[in-house]
Length: 167
Image (tube, rainbow, N blue to C red; front, side):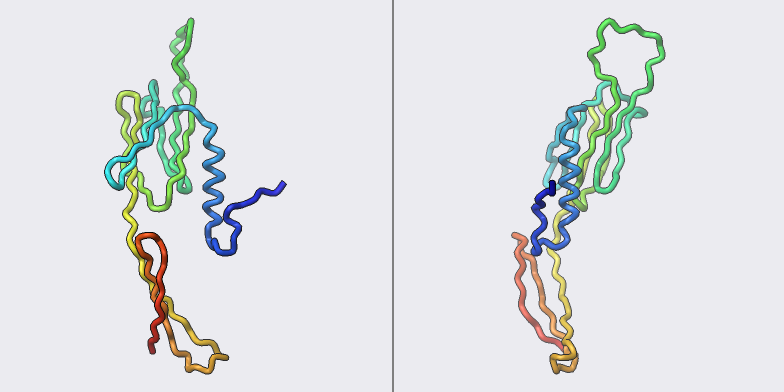
């Protein structure tokens, strides 16, 4: 059965990578361990906090893989010969992945009292203005005069254009 894509419109050029990102997010939603919080810190900061009680810094790894923040935990085998009558504290390995938007930077990771804090910074979007030259074709009868269109994005992401001629 073929899947209907939300990004198959001819007006959405170059958005096919969003579809792949959404697929990755859907696959990772079934994970429930370890529990985590995501909070906003300041205007451009985010903090992910994972509850990793029983894991030391040597048992944890944090890395970036294809715009994914991947946190892995693996505890060493307990070889002390202990016999548990009840084992309610989870001691299993885990992998938790968070898909990051383009431009988000990982600033720091700290382990404090069984909580792994990962601080992220979201860059401020800067308005971009770019002038695109328009070249006359051979059949236009012009002497290859260049015309440009200035495209300015406003705060809402809507573009305005105004033609300008130059030589």
